[in-house]
Length: 364
Image 1: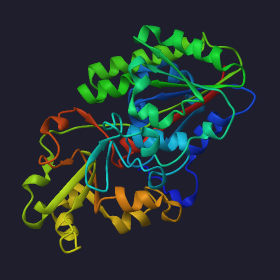
Image 2 (image 1 turned 60 degrees about the horizontal axis):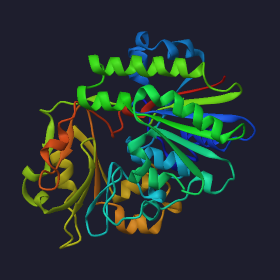
Image 3 (image 1 turned 30 degrees about the horizontal axis):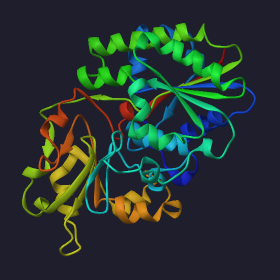
Image 4 (image 1 turned 135 degrees about the vertical axis):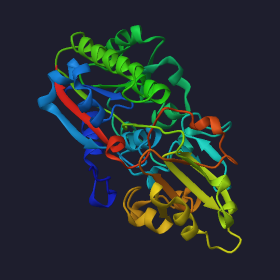
C-alpha cells in the first residue's frame, strides 16, 4: 500500500527531486516525464524494459500527487506548490459559476497564465530551459500554463522517429548549464486506448524503453538525467461506472461536476446551504471515498490550507471529491458525455497502481 502525499508534512519528495533537477547549477540536466508509467506496472513487466532493468539499482519508488492526473501533477512539479495554491485540481476544473475548464485544452478567451495561480521555478532563475514534446503541444493550454514565454524555448517533433533529434537540438540550445524537459506520451496513450498490460501497451513500453536506451548514447557527456512519471493506471471496468444523473433523491440537486471518472469533483445547488453529503456517501458506499470540503482541506491531499490561494478556495473547490476504489468510476451524464468514459485504462485516484511512480537519476 502506497500512502498518498500529505502536503502539510512539507515539500513532497517527488516535487523536491524534480525541483532540484530543474534548478540545478553547473551541470546540464535532462528531465524526462514518461506519461502514465506507474511503478507497479513497470515492476510487473520489467522483462519488457531492458533500459530500466539496467538501472534497477538507481530506480526509486516515489509517490505522485493527488489527484493523480497529468495536469495537476505537472502544475505542482513546475511550480513547486500544491493544487490548493496553483488551482489545477484535476483533469478539469470548475469556475465560480460552475463552468468546466479542460486543463489540457482550456477555454476560448481564457489566459493560461492567469488560470494557473502560481509562477514556475524558471521565472525566478536565469537558467535556460527547453521543452521537447509533440509539435501540437507548442500551443496547448497546458504548455501555456507551465511555460513562461520569455524563459522557455519549445522544440517540437512531428513523429516519434524525430524525437531524439529534437532532444539533441534542445540540449545544444540550453548549453552546459541549462535544462531540457522532455514529455513522452506514448505509454499513457496506449494505456487509455487499450488498457495497461495490453499488447499495445507493452509495445509502447518496449518502444519507449528502447528509445530511452538509444537516447542515452547520443546526448552530451556530463548530462544529469532524471526520469519519472506523473501517474500510473488501472484497467477500467465499463460495467462499474456509477452515474449521478441516476442517483436517487436530493442527489439530483448536483449542479456541476469536474475532473474525471476516478477523481470526480461535485458541486450541489446551494438553496439551503446544506449539500447532501451523507446521501452522497451512502450512494457511493464502498465504491469510493467521499471527501467533503473540510476533509479536502484537513487531509493535506491538495495542500496546506494555510498556504492555499484564497481564490482557489472560494471559487474552484466543489462540495465533495469522490475518489474511486477498485475499478469503479463516477460520472454525471447530465454534464459529461458518456463517451468520455470509454477508455480502457484510467487514473486519478489513490490506489498504489495510480500514485506509485518510478524515479531514476544518473549521470551520462
